[in-house]
Structure formats: C-alpha cells, structure tokens
Length: 438
Figure 1 (cartoon, one colour):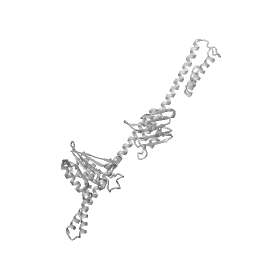
Figure 2: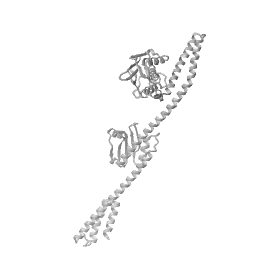
Figure 3: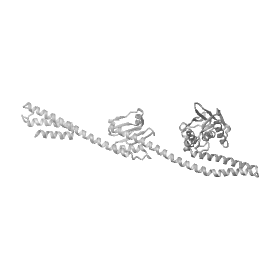
Figure 4: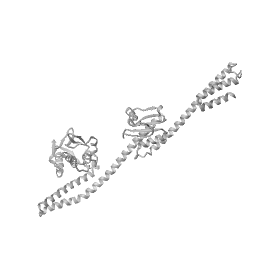
C-alpha cells in the first residue's frame, strides 16, 4: 500500500511541478521506503539484496512515470496551443475576406493579425505600393523589413520575440511582414502566405473595378459625344449653306463678304470635327468598321494635310521617303490617324520649326513617323498620352485641346493590327512612330 501511495504523490508532483521537482520527490520517497519500511527499520542500511533491488526498481519506475507524465503534459499543452493557433488562423482568414478594400488594407491586416494572434506588434512593408504600416510596438521595423526583402530571407529571433517573413505570391515578392511576440514558425509562414494572397486579391479587385468603371465611363462619354455630334451637325450644315447663300446674293460689301467667308470656313471646319467625333464614337467596334482596300499613301497624306490647312500652317510640313505606294488599309481611318498625329506635332512644336513626316515599307510593314522640335514628353507619361482625355502637365498651357486625339489614333492603328508609340528627347524633340502590317 505504501509503494502505490508514494508513486501517486510522485506522479502528482511531476504533473504539477515538472520533472526537477519529481526527481526530488522520487529520491525522498525511495529514502523514506528504505528508512521506514525496509529491514532494518529506522536505518538506511539494507539487509537483503532483494530489498535493494526493489528500492532501485521503485526509484526507476518513479522517475520513468514522472518523465512520461511531464511529456504528456507538454504534449497536451502543445496540442491546446496548436488548436488555439489553428482556430485563430481560421478566424483571421475568414475576417480577411471582409476587409474593406476602399480603406487601408495593410493597416486592417496588421490590426487583425495582432488581435487574433495576441502579438505585441505587427509591421508590414508593401513593396508594390512602397508603403509601410505597423500596429502595436514594432520599434524601427521599416528598415529591418526592407533589408530582409533585399536579402530575400526569412529570419526568427526567439530571444527578441521577433520573426520576419517575405511575402511571396508565386515567384514574385510583394513585400515583408514582421511579427513581434510569441509565434510558431509554421504559423508565421501560414500568415505570411495568407497576407500575400489577400494583398494580391485586393490589388486584382481594385484593377477589375477600375477597368469596369473605365468601361462604363467610356460608354457614357461615347454616348454623349455621339449625341452631341448628331445634334450639332444639322445647325452647322445650315450655317454653311446660309453663309454661302449670302455671298452668292452679291449685294454684300467687301467686309461683309469676307465675314461671310470666315463664317463658312469655320463652320465647315466644325462640320469636319463633328464627322470626326461621330467616327470616334464608333471606334469601340473598329474591328467591324474596318474597310481596308488598296489605297494611295500619297492621296491619304494629301487629304490629311488639306484637313489641317484651315487651322494650322501646313507649310511647315516636310515629307521624307517614298510616298508613291499602294497599301492595303482603311483610308478614312488612317487619314484620321495622320490628322491627329500631325495636328499634335504642329500644335506643340516651336513656331517656325519643321515637322517631318517619314514613310517606309520594310519587310511587309508600313512605317510612318512624325517628328517635331520643341516638345518633350517625360518617360513616365509616354503611355499615358494615348489614354483618352489625358494631357501632359508640361503641355496643358501651351495649346488648347481635349486629350482625345491620340487615343483615337491609337484605336485606329490597333484596328489595323498595328502599334503606335512615342519617343521624346529634351534636346531633339518628340517623334511618334506608327507601324502597320501590310
């Protein structure tokens, strides 16, 4: 009865106090058995070998049971902790789906991670947006995160309760995240993967919403342009006919005849602009509107020049290359391209300087370039100038415009399966290049 009682006490101590305390209790229990219950009693002497073996076996069994009970308690604690972390990860992943993408996504993620994992602080560096966010106490975390991202290395500092993970989506690094507080390495890896996934998801969502908004806005703009162009076309025709009739009457003074001529000329120019707007409004369906045929390149260039002659000094135009070519394209659409690019060059070039148009047909392509001096487009804006209604800040005050022309030219060129791009240098000027497969 004594031995089971001693074993029970030893197990209880091992379970509650740990293995060091269990060793002390097991030693004391062995000595107590020897002193009080083993012959000769009240002495630490052992009379028989059997009693000695029994005491040794008791001590070993007591220590073994203490060790096993400690391991069971440790495993139970780890299981409870793992279960709590898994539950926290599940709650975190579910709450991340409810993030308000219109507000600061990084700040919301950091706050949810800190609260859910009970950390001292969380810091996040979004390398795509070049934005640093932190919640709680993270110290000077920004530089550490940037350094870890440059080295492309995760690290753990248990003594400082700090872990850093690189945020990766596929093979691309999106940034880095720092955890300050007790956190398991596997849990840190899982949270980093979760954060990277949600950052990419939010980015894709924003891009999709922006694209959809742009599509809706473009449809509204197109409808407005179409409606205005149709509404303006009839009164413009009336003005042209009326001013022409006034001049035919013959009873006008010289000044009145000149004024009637100006009205007719400007009304005709507005009518041309209206036709251009009508064609532009339908360019979204350019694939079905494209009507290619064998066309004289010289005739298209001449028509484009004639259209610009009313408003610009076309004597500045210089033509270099072979223009006696028969090419297969839609003459109306390509004339529109040339008008927009030449108008842009004449409008923003230095007064009195030449605007050079070059044409060539190497290896089955029609290559056309328009160069002007005195204008410069920064590298960051060279794609933006082809977006509708965009105008470079440096050119907004040099000449009037709507920012529609180059976007129309781009759509018309792409309808021919071609491409248009711009090169610009502060010293030499700006050149627009057009490349269309024949």
